[in-house]
Picture (tube, rainbow, N blue to C red):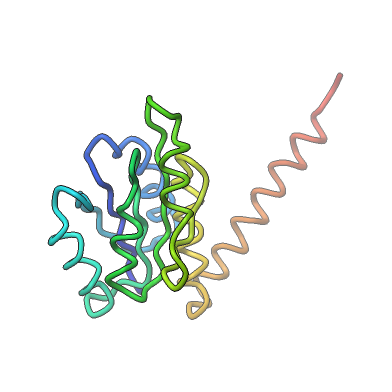
Length: 160
């Protein structure tokens, strides 16, 4: 199975990114976590992205706040799918990161999830990998069935 790279711009991003790691682990998807900044360690970030395919990665998740150029910087160096997680900051509540992540120039796509949407980033990476992995696709199908059952159980228990 291909790995997922989980890259964050700062160690302060770890609390949000833990949700992605937890989801990848639950689906038994191998992953690596790194701290690479698009601005403070641009060479390391570029090297990771440029060599990710040959190192067995199938997708990259990039989490960053404020200027949030990390996902785009990684996408510029690889044709692997890059999923951006815009992170909430105290200044602009994550809107700056959302716009920086989602507004990529033509020819440089970055999939973008909700602000602090780490779990969905992991699920999107899993769905990308599941295109060629039937066992993973079955896990995702089962998870959706379990989620639906949980909602229906809540509906059945609802009393007003």
